[in-house]
Length: 468
Image (cartoon, rainbow, N blue to C red; front, side, top):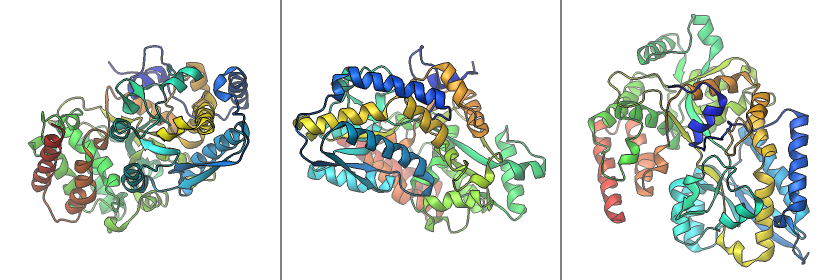
């Protein structure tokens, strides 16, 4: 039965408890912010987590964040506000903000720092499987007692991606879903509406191409960008749960239905539906193709809604952007409404903080000031990030006033199930193979869908054997 309320939306998004109200992430209402701030202030007075260490000698801590680029300025502003509050609460503390591209941070810098034993004190952390690997190695601070002390352990919608052997080693900053953003003004000029069948979608792509426009934004220098859409396609053909079965051996990358997903992506490539030269384009160019009107559709995460706000790069399209889920494919396996969603992006903390009283105080203060209703609502309204914490239904209803976000919520409510992205389900070597080699080869015509499946399965079996 389809979920028709914002309350049930969050149940879908984060597999939360029955008392969960919904999702939200920012606040345009001064009244709501004031109430949240007052509550936080009261908690700060009462909680031992905000007690100041005796020493006021200067000390520095680093926060590795990924809020870089013009489209992440709202997110950076939220982080900077939290930094200011924490520095005011912890005597002598100065934070150094180290901004790094998210892909570089996850796959290069943080991985190397963890191996060397010198990660930043606070850092952007991917949940599954990264946090569990680092937790097993003893690199992450156990946050379980801190969350209990702050009284927020049960306030999160889903902490599974950051949980290892019953302990919590990271906190999600928000949630997201993935689908198609489309230019409603162009669609209206053609007398179209968002497609409800896969055949209709493909008819629209062909017509856009014939009209001299770029049907789909494309930027594949970083493999994770084209893999958002490719992941959803193979999950339509082979089932939303298929990717989770690769690491267990229950399914293979070379299975015919998985290959159908690769083949459909290659077909769209061959028909010229993506921006030509995409293998040389970074993610920022992806957005520009859409906001400039060059590309009519863009497959991306719901976080991208933040650019269609006043003062942002896509403000010229305010009121002119819609969002839809990939329609059902003929012969597809499983729930054909399933949407790719996750709560995998968040913050982690170095295990070394447990040995330093002042660092530990700073970590507690950071968590208290970052993870509360006010900041979750700010994230929703200002940045389009769905909340990671449970928010009261009435507060959510009052704050979700943006037309695009309302449309996104409707799409999420109409999906009956969800599945996480591939890189939270398979081993790092498999992620590297598909992200850095196979998807680019497919796009560049250097491999076939069948050979791609075979190559991935070979790496998958090696990774599975290593675990055994």
